[in-house]
Length: 390
Image (tube, rainbow, N blue to C red; front, side):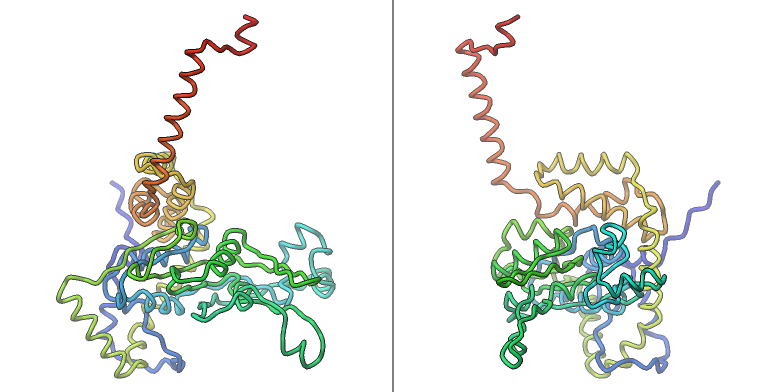
C-alpha cells in the first residue's frame, strides 16, 4: 500500500496551522534585523482564509489579486504588510526604460532601446533577479501620482518637459496595496483597474506619450461600514475574503499578548519568527517555479463549471479564478496535478460576492421577452425564406 505523502509546511499554513507556534518558545538569536520591522505575517493569529488567499496570490499572479473585506482592527493591513518578508524574487529589467528579452523576441531590436540592443548583441543579460516589493497607494494620491505626469520642477527650473513614471509603473511585478479601496475616486479606480487587467497603460500629456508596464498583483482592503464597492471594481479582484474578529476568547487573548510583545521589543519578537518565515518564503518560491507544470484534472474543471452554473454567476472570471487558485494550491502542496479537492478548498474565496441578483433577474426578464417574441412569430405564422422554399 502506498504511503500517504506528508503535507508541505506551506499547505499546513494554508490549512490554518502555523509552524510559528513552536518558534515563539525558541531562544532569540541576533539576526541583524533592519530598523523598519513589520509585524510578522506568521505571527497573525487565526485568519486562515485571509492568509491562504494572500499566499495563493503570491504563488500565482493569474489569480487576479485579493480583496479583504471586514471591520476595523481585524488585521487586514497588518497581514498585507507582513508579506514583505515572504515576497519571492522576479526577473526585473536593468534598463530605466524597462527593456526585456521578451520584448526583443516579440518585436526585434526596434522594441528595445539602442543600449539594450547592444547588450543583447554582446550576450549580456537585460534582466536581473530582484525581490518583489510591496507598493502602497497613498491615501492622498492624485491621478498624476498614480499614472505619471509631467515633471513640474524640471519644467519650471529648466524649461524642459518630461514625463515621469507613476505608482502603477513602479508597481510592475510587485504587489500594489490599496487600503480603503471602496473610497477610491472613480478616476483612480478606473486607471488602476485598466492597468491591472491589461498589464500596461499609456500616459498622454499633449504631444508626449509613454506606455508603461504594470503587471502587478492587486490587493485591496475595505470596511463595508464606509460604503460598498462598485461592481466593476469588485469583479476585478480574484479572491474575496470576509475578515472578522475571532469569537474564541483564547485566540483573542493570544492576539493581545503578541501585540504587546511586539510593542515592547519588535526586534526580539520578529526574530522569533525569522526561521519559520525563511522556510515559508522558500516554499513559496518553490511553488512559483512548480506552477507552470501544474495541470488540472477534467473532474476539477467540471466541478468549477458546475459550481458557477449552480450559483448562476454570469462573470467568466469566476471559473478562471477558481481554477487558477486550485493550481496554486496544488503547487503549494508540491503536486503537479490540481484535483477536485483543490477546487473545493478555494471555491468559497473565488466565488464569494460574485452572484448578482440584479443581473440574474435582468437575464431572466430578457429570456422571457425573447420567448414572447418567438411565440408571437409562431402565432402569426411567419416563416423564413428557407422554410418557404421547402
